[in-house]
Length: 195
Image (cartoon, rainbow, N blue to C red):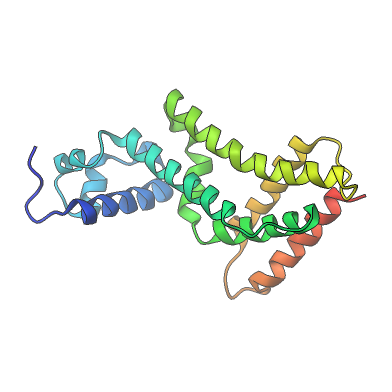
């Protein structure tokens, strides 16, 4: 199949993903057609299939890329001397990484239900890997005698849910700076896991 005149895979492919990301975040996956994505990019609808087999593959790739970027960025952080430092680092990292990617975060949480079973399994495994990173910190803190937690899995999910809340209300230029918000959330997380 010939590529559309004047298109370049290294330019058009990323433009298609960016258009899909914006449209899925704004209107929801189910409400967006391949024709709308093509219109946003400025190519014929049929040309999209040179870059992606279908809309499901596009959604999966967006979610997969987000999770891989998240895991890579987290794994690149400096190792902390103790669990308290590692938890503090996780809080700041999670807030700042996700605030820079509101569309990716929205899709990663709200569009899971639209993944095929096979794609859901893969994305769920990536999510679990990230959650396990935090749960390992909480377990270490228990072993070090720093944290008092009844169930580390529930605490992991609760901390992530609390931190995700920042993405729904924080606006740059508001009453509090991001540094202040991060410190307040760190204080709440620390108090939630220490005795």
